[in-house]
Length: 247
Image 1 (cartoon, rainbow, N blue to C red):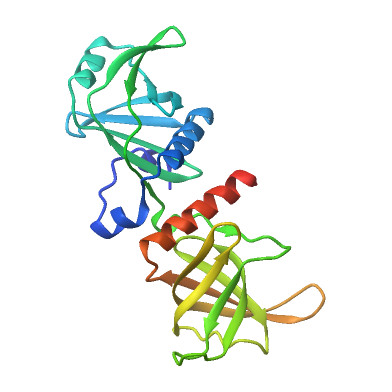
Image 2: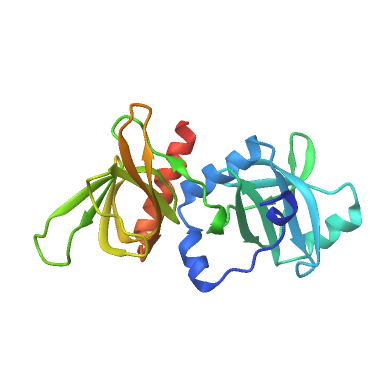
C-alpha cells in the first residue's frame, strides 16, 4: 500500500466495518499514541472529503487528541466549522481511519492545535496487505483441526508459522496431517497464550513439500481464515498488536 492510498478515505462494506472496528478505549489510545510518537503523516479530510490537510498528530491521552493546525487561517476556519471530519493515517503499514466532530482550538506546546475527544471507535484495515506475524520459535502457536465433524473425533495439532486476521501458514511433518488444497476444515481452534482461544474455518489455498537444513521434508500450507466471529477477530487483533509491541 503506497503513501497516497494510505491517506485517502476508504469506503468500507458493512462486513469490513464490523470486522475491523476497534472500540476499546485503551486500544484506541494506544493506537493513536503510537501514530503520534512515530510521527506518521496524518490527513484530516474536510469539505465532504473533497479537501484534506496533511498534518501531524501532536499528542494523545485518555482525554483526547491534538492535531497540528494549518499555517493558512482560511483552512483552519473551514475545519473549525466542519462537523464531518475524517482522520486517516497508518499504523504498522495498516490504514487507520475514523470520524471526528467539531474541533476546539487549544494550546499544545505553546502552539494552537485542533483538539478532539478520543473517537468512540476506529477502523484498522489491511485488506490483502494483512500484516503476517511470525510465531515464536519456542512454543509456537498450534492450530487444532478436527478430523471429522463427529463428536469426540480425533484432533490434529498443526504448527502455525505465521498468522494474520486473514490467514495463516501451517506446517507439519510430510507424513503427518493431510492438508489438501481447496479443502475446508471447520471448527478449527487456535490458543493465543494469555489472551484466549479463537475458532473459525480454515481453507487450504496452497501447499508445498519443503526440505529443512537437516534434510527432513515437511509440508507447508497457506491457509485462509474464515467464519471467525467478532470476539475471535478482536482477540486475534489484540494478540497481534501485543506481539508487534513486544517485537
